[in-house]
Amino acid sequence: MQVIIDNWPALMRAFGVTLQLLGMGALGSIVLGNLVALLRISPVASLRWIATLYTEIVRNTPLTLVFFFFAIVLPTLQIRFDYLLGAGIALSIYTSPFIAEALRSGINGVPIGQAEAARSLGLSFGQTVTSIVFPQAIRMVVAPLINVIIALTKNTSVAAGFYVVELVAESKVLANAHGDQVINILVAVACLYLVITIPLGQLAGVVERKVAVIR
Amino acid sequence: MSASVLYDAPGPKTRARSRLISYISFTVIVGAFVWLIVALALPRTTVNGVVLTGVFSPERWEFALDVQFWRRLLIDGLLMGTLRVAALAAVLAVLIGVAFSFGRTARSVVIRVPVAIILELFRGMPVLLMMLFILLVMRTNGYWAAVWALAVYNGAIIGEALRSGIAALPRGQREAGLSLGLTPFKTRMLIEFPQAFRQMLPIIVAQLVVLLKDTSLAYIVAYPEILRISQQLRDFYGSTTVSFSLFTIVLVIYLAVNLALSAFARWLARRPASASSISQADAHAIDLVATGADVVTDEDKNPFGDGRR
Image (cartoon, rainbow over all chains, first blue to last red; front, side, top):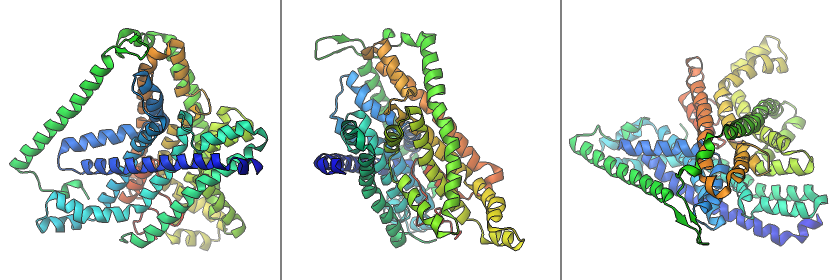
């Protein structure tokens, strides 16, 4: 226990880095994910293909490989990022197809009648999507979206392997320095993750019960 | 809802416009690719003044003619590294999932509540942290750390999927079993569980795709899976020249294996035999699980929202 109290500032700094990664990843992937979801339902066939191709490729690439690209391959090509920024971009790219798929499954879940009604009132594609279909889709997929964010929280740990000192990397450092208290250190770090993921899970449940459209 | 409901069948004006957008986006994307390829192919001068050849120059790829290279990457890396971990972890994950689903639906509170708490803990923790824990606390090697961490984490998710499968069965199934004089345990084993397993099979397979992808985390705990082997090969063949080529090759291998497995999961979901039991909403859920998001939440007995309460 002593080791955790002694190293509390370092742990909090690492926790801050994890939160930073989570913030960057969430923001970037939501922006990218919305874009991809919109492309996937767009009337222009070529845009749909592009979005589908992007989704399939990124979704089947391991996150470690995305990180590997930003931290190890790009520098050999003389393209350098700050490691934290690179990790944020890697997380955004990796998470974006999941956000897009969640949104798309929500859009698919909106009954046909809604779009038909909108169209019969003379609304255009843009109006139908932005004012009728999308708002309902969002309400239906809040819980899956929060689950994607929870998965993102856990995925930030992969940055530990690529020179970012977040929680897992810090726990590795501490564990090496205090070989006799490895269990305490790892349990403390696990608790810090649960501090993020469990409330998010609860939030998903609450929000779902509040806003979900029951059909 | 098919996307086409959102807009009219295109008229001549719209068709012309969408053709124009297609041409523009095609030009932009092809242009970006050409730019990237040219940029990569050009020689570069490093900060030290050393001139590096472009990434497509022959000496950066000639290692691929070496049979030893492919033996090392495919046999040692993919087969004996990645797939060996994935196979054992998959079997264990399904077994652990079955055990969890039994514990989670047990009648006795003494079993049900602790199992629920343990499940939440396992699902809320990064796999990498679990690997580290096993590696450092159990003092095993990277292989067992990877296998057990992946098995426990994915087992927890499969367990939740199975439990929601049991919860989604029509109540009459259980009542019928009990009314025939079967014990609750036998009812579960003989009637409820086989149906739930069958119904959740696509979700389980999709989760196994996630497991396969996650084996690459073992790279970080220094287990020699395909990415780690590729890095050793990179050092062997000269780290500055071959790293881009090697990365491309590993990426293509991962995409091939994962796309094949995803396609299998989708085929399983669309098979005529299971079409009657798997609704459209389930297919979306499968898509979601295949994306790595666990759709099965604790509050939600029936995660598919298709009205089967």
